[in-house]
Each structure stands twice: as structure tokens, then as C-alpha cells.
Image 1 (cartoon, rainbow, N blue to C red):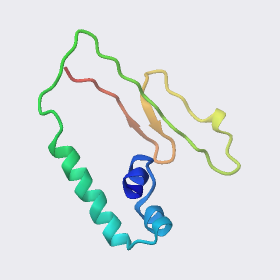
Image 2: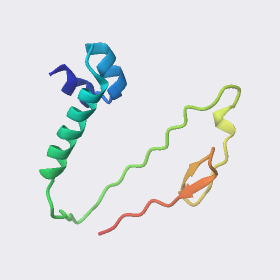
Image 3: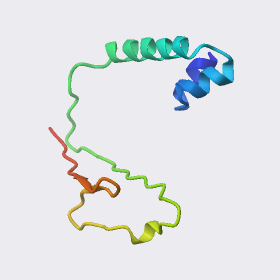
Length: 94
């Protein structure tokens, strides 16, 4: 039960194995097993509604000495990876 709690809280496999005193490989195998079972039970059809809502989040933890309020912004609603200078356009398919 504690392993599952750690998975659901988003803890790393390394953290869970150290906290519970378990072998890393065992915890990793259980994580993969639970993920496979979850994916196997996903709904296979697309559920379409009249309106679709999509939320976007870009989290920037910043770097030492860097003021995150002065990072480049773009007016075309694209997400930005500042470190890699890569840009992604968010697309919704219906």
C-alpha cells in the first residue's frame, strides 16, 4: 500500500525504495506492472463533447541568479523551453 501511495504522490522510484528499505529493481518492476495494468484498462474510444476545455501549464523553477520575470515571452500562445530555445505549439484534435 505504501508503494502505491508513493506512486500516486509522484515520488521517484529511488525515493520510495530508500524510504521503505526495498530493492530499487523490485519497486521499479512494480511501478511498470501497475502502469501496464492501468494502460490496459483505458477507454479505447474518444469521447467528444460540444465544448472542449484545455489547460496549459509551463513551470519554470528558474536558475540561481536568474530573474524568471525577465524571461522571453511570445505573443502567439506557444509554450517555450527557455534552456533549449525550443518552442512547442499546443494543438487540440477533435
